[in-house]
Image 1: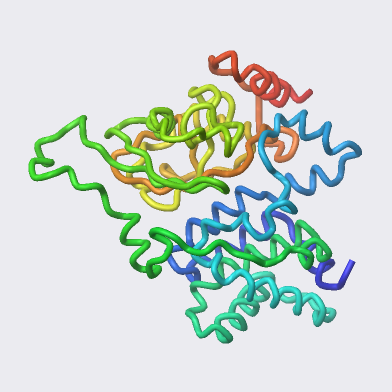
Image 2 (image 1 turned 45 degrees about the horizontal axis):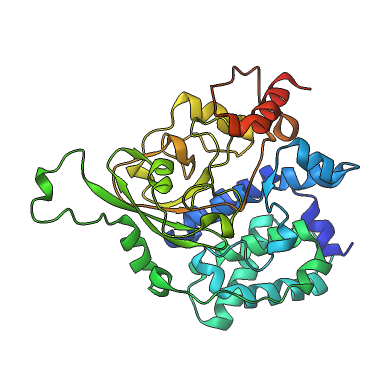
Length: 345
């Protein structure tokens, strides 16, 4: 292990999240939620837990893991929903160079992130606030996958399309807007229609949602393509789903825009998120939600993680006794895993 790897490996997930919280004022609004979401999508505690077991495959089955969890498979792609994704090649090369040149020392984690970002922003002549987020993501990626795998990745990025081709300020403004309700829109009540813009690792687009409708319900109505061909967890619509009752955790999402247009987190969702281990913030309307429990009253922009699981009890140890909510039979295995987690087996 290189000196740089050893330096990064001393920090816990809590240390990283503390550094991100300190860094937030220095991250452009376009990526402020995105960075915090990314660190929940790829939690260090879960990665280290799996690394430490004798049989990772059996452990993943025990945690009811579905989809692609391993960050090693997504080094260049995991951060596709960040505006700063476009700066990834330069960030990646700078981190590789830092790994070679790093000497003994104990600099603050947040200072290492800022230093990487400063050097890249200077070279590219862009605002550091646009680079700080992807620098933090890059360093955590290096930390989780190791130097060899990190260097082996090609460093390719997706070409910005749609709204992401616009300026950071324009993207923020666009995410805050609601669809027009027409000339007599002010007369409408429950039948107001809005849009949910979504981005997954292999799909992106928009679907319509009626005012006060759950995101999952609206997603299920989108039959525009074979969503399961891109993601086996997607039985109906682009948002993965099993139970629609907060009992499986399949439909967790990150909210890039429109948090204030979603319903408050209810007790069922709050409790379930702890069971799943997703580390949802305590805000009434946080950036991490269950789509089956989130009702929209305006346009929302979401990002869909490539995996889901149940690891709160075993990895975070923050789950007490749990009375399970009713769920569909399709979520049977997930419910059994939740029951096992709640009982401490």
